[in-house]
Structures are given as structure tokens and as C-alpha cells.
Length: 121
Image (cartoon, rainbow, N blue to C red; front, side, top):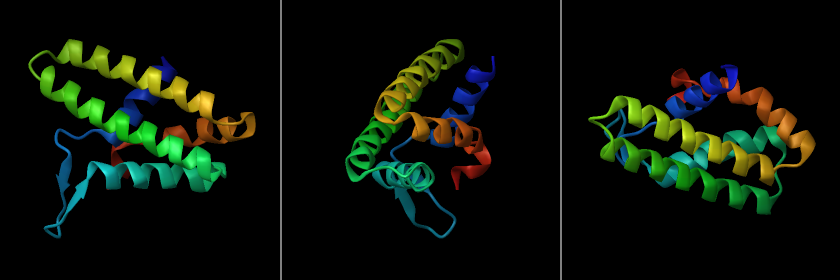
């Protein structure tokens, strides 16, 4: 249950219905910029190598893209959307775990709980 809640919190962090998110100052954040910000937040805490950073950013871009696609495809089916997002996040977590060293993974597991809807900005 705790893992599901963590995954849903991570989903809230990365949730977006469109590739561009409008900001209060009139600007927008592209999906690539959001992926870079997510990757940087993880990288600075887990001490990623350059190669790991590139791979993690690629995972984050894919995650955000797939989440947007799922939201558009399943917006009329909330139960199916929740299940699809949960499956997507489990695959993401598996891929991140395969990318990180054991010490990095321990740090990442500790900071996952910080990824909540409040931290979207």
C-alpha cells in the first residue's frame, strides 16, 4: 500500500495533460524542461554520473510523455487510467532501480516521498 501511495505521489509530481504547462508569469514549461528539472532534483541528491544523468533524463522524458498520452486516451475511464498510470510508474521505478547503484538507490528511495503535488512548481 505504501508503494502505491508513493507511486501515486510521484505521478502527481509528473502529471500534466499537455506537453506544455502554463505558468503564472505567462511562460510555459515544456515536457523536456520538466524532465530536466526532475532529473536534476534526483541527480543532485543521489550523486549521479553523467551517463546515469543522461539515462535518467531519457526515462523521465518517456515517463512524462507516456503519462500525457495515457491521460488523453483514458480521460473518460478513471479506473483504467489509475491502473495504467500505476503500471507505468512501476515500470519506471524498475528502470530507475536498474540504473542506480545500491547506495544511490537507497537515497532515491528516501527522497521519493518528497515528490508530491506541492513540489510540481
